[in-house]
Image 1 (tube, rainbow, N blue to C red):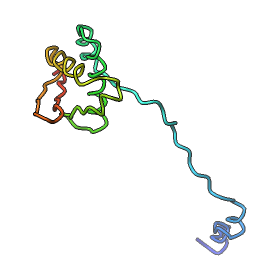
Image 2: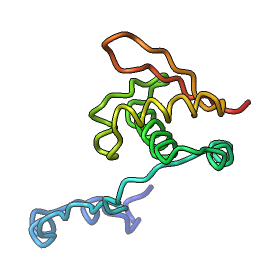
Image 3: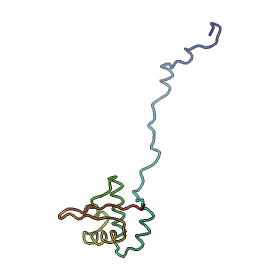
Image 4: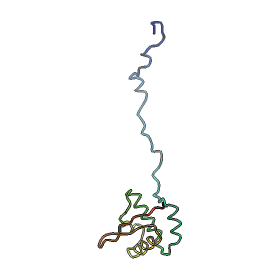
Length: 124
């Protein structure tokens, strides 16, 4: 570059006056609003659950899927607290777990005095 060039670095500097005119920075809004909770049910599960005869089987299945999603763990522990949110008693949950196991959707391990540990079975 020569002295005759019109390029001046001072023309590109940020001045205090420029910054004062910018005002406050705005916080970015989230791209999505908090939505109602949902359950993602595998199609294979939905097809198998059409064969269920107990009323509590489908809600227990949804409860299990929700627990797996929330904890990001499989197997999940099926607590009475989680079931009470769905309005399901221990007796109904036992019947539902037996039916889910018969349908091939879960494997259940019972421990005396503790909630059952349920492994969700995914199709291959």
